[in-house]
Length: 320
Image 1 (tube, rainbow, N blue to C red):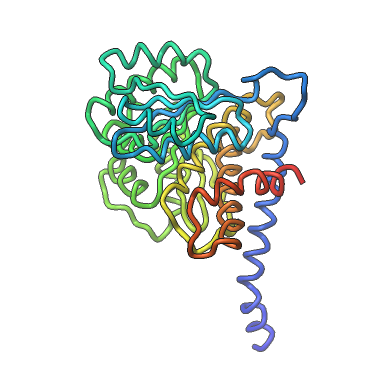
Image 2: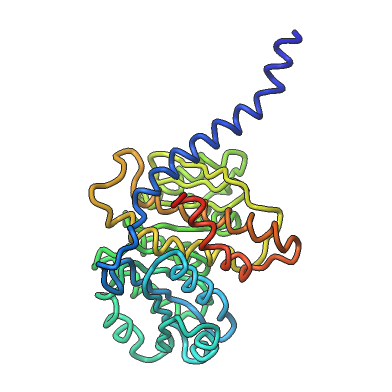
């Protein structure tokens, strides 16, 4: 009996070590999609990322997403926002290319001119729920699908998907990044029944399947990622500090990683899809940034502190 009790006592540690082993195995695959830094490349080759979002009430979210994409290693970040939000977002950083067109009468035409130049699109940070903006976002998603561009959908972009799942149904280069509340809304919209939260891994698998194997990333203490065929768990530890904007850091960095993952030749793995790899990499990076910022700032940690950790965290995870 004593031996059995000892084995049971060791079981949580065994689970943790197994999860960490799986994390390291997946991280090693993510490292293979990171492009080398070389003087032989031209500006834009490592990623031109578009952010669809930013309105009068929400200007921080698109900035966090766009600057995170740059700090991960994308070359250019474009923010397509409303006219009222543009000056504010420009004032945050001169690094961003800001287009004040999202609420213009010819918004779709203005954005469509830039889509051929973009390698991936992040839809939702600071978008809000104005019907006109959501309608434009839906049309931009349709145009981007026709161009085979990876699309990351977060925040109010997920509200749009919950109302109209067909906008992203079956698109294999889409990645949805809901928190638990957003996930619940999506699940119940697709399944027409309450979510049983007792087995989140199974629920993520089911939602991805219901969406036509679109990759779904459920954010939490342990991030769960599924493409409808398998579930990856990111067990890296962040901190107990939760502040607004962390999801925008994740979605922006995912915009860059998705471009790299889908562009990698040959594909780094037959069993792990590019979308799964990119999502796992963004999860790991966000948690590492959170952990490092918390070590310095503790309870006072904000997303701006986390963004300052992107370079060191990226080096630790993917370049060490």
